[in-house]
Image 1 (spheres, each protein chain N blue to C red):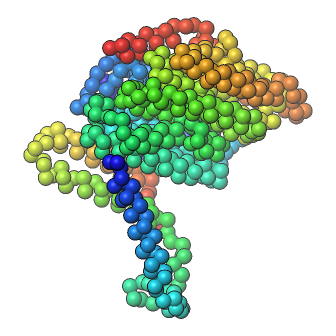
Image 2 (cartoon, helix red, strand yellow):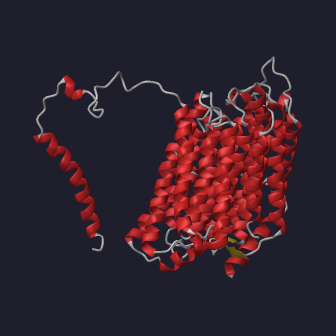
Image 3 (cartoon, rainbow over the protein chains, first blue to last red):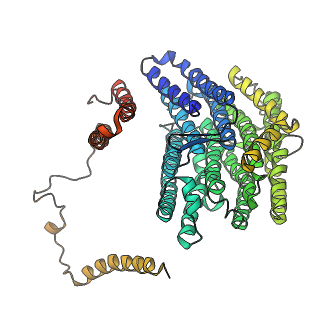
Length: 476
Length: 116
């Protein structure tokens, strides 16, 4: 049963939906623990079956170490998202938000996207691949528009649907062309049959557009800022981490599992995309005032660093990307936990509203500062280590100019991350500002995330494990 | 050169659409009047404007109908090859129906089937 984790997630989602129907509003607080326990059990079943290789369902579904690490990432980010969203949904907030609720549906839909992403990394068939990608994307449209009385949330959902449908259409056309060229939907058969011809390049371009949409690579990033700003804060956290992971998983499926013969030729293209993405994300983030919009551009620039791992198609790129993805999940979610907490307690989302936070809530300000520094890549925090591996992949592939661009971008990013730190530590607090309360769940989540984020940078065993497992699989 | 016909085809496709529109614009007589501009409703004289508000419940019914309509369409091919796919096929259809019934239970419990 190599699809046991997926099965657990499905069963859990169905159980939540049915329980929700027969509970009165007051007892629905148990739904969040149900979802969290479901994900923990799925994670346990994944970990018990340590990286394994296997094929099932007529070769359409397979597991290998790379997919295994992606699944760990998806389950982890889903779990943290549940932990940071339950306060908002249960109404344990300082400023009550209108039009948020429907807890049963929220967790069901969230588990559905996690399921889609998990199947996505295991799919070995065009149709499974496309259906699972849709399963991962469509619930996100719904989650984005979750605050149904809020005009901004509705607008974000609408924009996301339209752009998403466009990207899906592009992707489907690309997959259709591949099927037409090779006459098969199995990935292995396609890999053997592909030949260098214009229709193949058209298909690749279509697929790149679709992946670029999910990963917010620069010419396809327009939706990100508005969607991230309009969505409820926990959903933004999930979008910025898991949705990006899904994009990377899809890129991985295509670039390493089919086109590994061509990936070296595409290196210059990938490098240009990476350079554009990080430069635009970083320069535009400087002028933002809304913290969620700011994090959107920060996430765009992080995607630019992330795709550096594809440059040259070196085997070292895979563990570097997986490691950075895990680091990015923990760090970004730590920062977002602070943002969620702040918007829960005050209902404010401007960067200027954070002034004097270090006076009133020194510990939370400290965790947020650590998270931001890790995103900027300051040693000894884990973000530095992750970036170091990615940069070294690019330099090994001979793209020294890309490493230089990335290094300059890291410096720029430090400037704008410091803007928030400055608001928190240097600007004086308002006279009437008092210490804001924090709920135990959020405090515990924040503490664990911060500690993990520190430890990942200091203890090298995580990277070594990922590296040895994935490289062993590649050498096979 | 393999792609010459693709190019020719796309060119012809654009020309065909544009040509039709332009040609009909050029040769058709333009004499609009009030009766000609009224919307065509199977020969009936239209009553009032088409821009009226109607119950949002129609959408819910349409959505639910669509799901079960598609379900029926999926069941036909299965029924045709029932003897070939045998018990595994029956099991798969059972799972498929279970998922849809789950949706029906949800819609029923949430009151989507009650007309308000």
